[in-house]
Image (cartoon, rainbow, N blue to C red):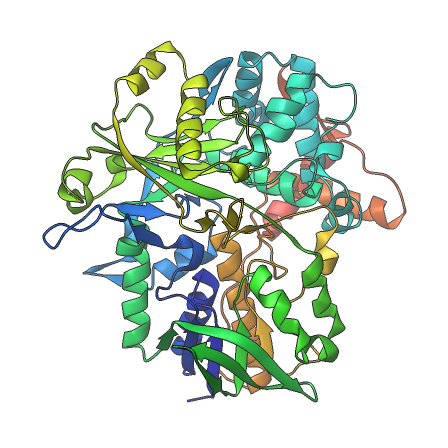
Length: 574
């Protein structure tokens, strides 16, 4: 063994760190407050929905989906056995993404990834078609795409210096003379449902770039835009992962709540935990903090912040609610083979009918009391907006009010035929994420909020390793990563960075974990190279690819750009 490591937290980040460390010869103990691992990714047993002969129906914190731009998490999943295959084989592609609104609906058809200038209009065609359906003027849609292209053609230095400090709302021009529908459906609607953040808050650098990743995924002919699991999350991913790590010798201490992290002279000396109401002190050579920000920040007071004051930036990071509700239905709804984004629903809903993707043993008629035939899983992304039926904010609603209001908003955003389908369905019962606690004492609280990206927050976020605390590392979705968003992918990447730092400081000869940047089409490399020169000269960013007449064109000098692009491609530049 190359040393003992204590990992604080058994969510995706903590399990990812334990996985990488165990493969590299470390003795690993994972400390988890709950009696189950998986964090926000885990699924739950729906109360009263099973018996000794039938497994319970599953509930969840929110449905899991795996965009095509994810690389770190699938790489880990391919190394988790599942029978004769791997957990990664449990990922299946959804073929459609539906946009539903109170003004109409649209299915987004995939097109191929843009490889040449004349192909770019195909990559953005669906935006024009969608915008037309929600009555956005073509010139406004062209402006929105211009903003995306400006981001793609800007160098990384400019993105951090300028766009990180701007909100996506400001960068996209929604605060100017653009139409109300422009802000409602493009600037805000797409981002809060696809990226799980608010346009007025998140940085233009992060929000715009992740949105671009999703849009280019949609253009991928491989059909990997939107992948989902072929069964309940814990059954087909988390439980096999836990078994695999235990087989590798990882020790899991469940029901152990971290009370303090002790630090002296720039070194962590141990952690205090409470298990079964008894205090316990644990010690190791290395420590990985894989706890969410709302749990980690209060632990900084016992020496950590004194050793490294930069960690105090965690107190400035913000969280919001994003939780799921599941409806169990008397018949299945399979109108869309994928997710439906309710683009203008007050509570920013996204839904998916799950049984169509699940293996036979997980079909709902084989679970619970056998009555359910359909499972509709919904993410509620905005808990601070007024409902259109109950006229209350979601966070002030009871469980019954949330169930009624979400169903009401679904019907509002669907056309007549789809609404009649919903009216013909009986909701047997529903399951709201148990992290929503009622009451406390007069309103709900959220035990597991989601970290959100805000403009300028990069400076408050720590690296995975501290140069002032030699044996303590961070692995959570608030760590600086290429992914730069509170996602399972970001948590996995952060864990890899923490493990690589341990390898370096321990002098281990083990191979470092792979860490990848987000993909950028080579087409834009010469423009980014030119902008890097202009940025160093103090020149402002200028659009070098423009949208005109529903087409995307390269700005002049096109011949020079084309020649430079050929040279960059020949050298294999990203």
